Length: 558
Image (cartoon, rainbow, N blue to C red; front, side, top):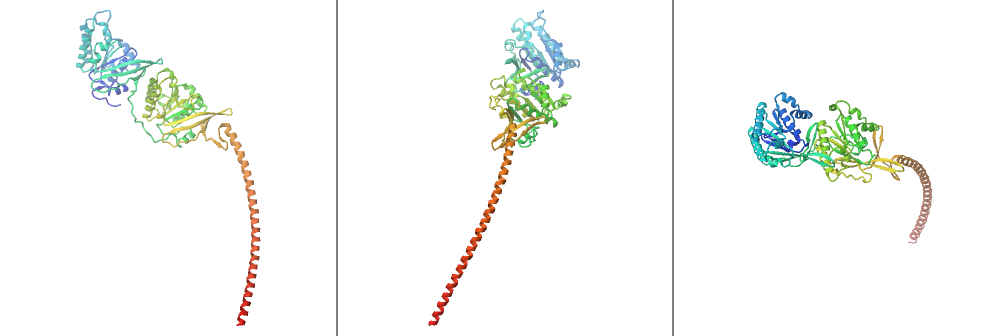
């Protein structure tokens, strides 16, 4: 964790400190406002106890809850407030007004300041929390008297140079009426609850921060027994870790479709298909393979319980149970079933990211992400999924997501997150002759030489088996039709080979006949040529004799 700037005091809530560019303004008062259940007390206790753990003692002034209740709250979030009190590092002042008494305006707050000053000096505190300050409104007869007293208290706080966090409820215009936001507080943080589709989401916004920049967007945050967790919308940049290492999917045929060695580590894979096409089985195969390599896997199931998932995948040879045994820190497989309808999208995002940061897995499985979109409208699901995928990629973690496609979807994804997907595997059913077969296609795989062929896959007790399709004279065949077509083609091939052998024999015989005929014809041609040559020779001889006779007669006459 980076060291905060010297003019800030870290709250101990990483996302909030990011929004505040390091933390609350040091030595100055800040205001935290929000209605019941928005998380004011938890943020205050976290700020105070985190400071104590960092060596800055604290004082908590409560105008609403009892000290005992606050100590229990702190213990529920893992802070040992009782031990801090025993060690003299924390003091809680009970300033709850007594409704049965009428307090003088000036004297009441003078006594409060005196008690706070004593507590601050006694503990040497650098941090102060004033919880539920708006409760004082009922103890004053006029707004003017309370306003002047509050101004005096805050002037005194600035002089004490103590980092102070004041909380108020959402009473109508309380902070505006008394000038707390405009004049008193150097930093104002607003909390609220948003209800959408009957699901509540807590939101935080930094309204102002004097002397420094800050995030301005409303940021969802998670509040449960583990404390406050938030991921600022503006808190991510394009800095994903890139690896050249290839990892096996656990399915040899799929590895072959992805260039022979599987996808790159840190990639995001999407298996999309209709019901029954094997999406979960593909994801489970990758899970089992990663566990066998000794890597940690976080498997988040939105539809199946742990027992269902373990039982169902045993049929294809994936023994997930043995990877879930032992202490959580030593387990290779962390199975987290979460019903998609139980919480809002932002809470899903934060719970997933918190689990990732806690367990530091090498592989994250989200099965199926389409469950998050079933009851949503607009772009909220897409925005959440894009942020989630991006955050996982930034951490260099391999992610596997499955998507259920409707039967009438024509194989088209409606999540519209393909821009963030590195490897997209599409699964589909092929129904013919009363039989259903499963087909797999590598739609895309960034940086990999993928197969363009549609292949068939089937389940076996030793895992998933991907086979090349059978392509015969009559086209492509799958399943039992593939075997029948292959048998028919083998018989046809055998028959054709026999016919080819007979045809070749006939051709050899014909070649021999032709050769014999050619030899005979050649002999006849040779014989005729000899006779002609003899005839020519005889004629030439006779002509020569006649010529000699004539020459002799001519010489005798001379």
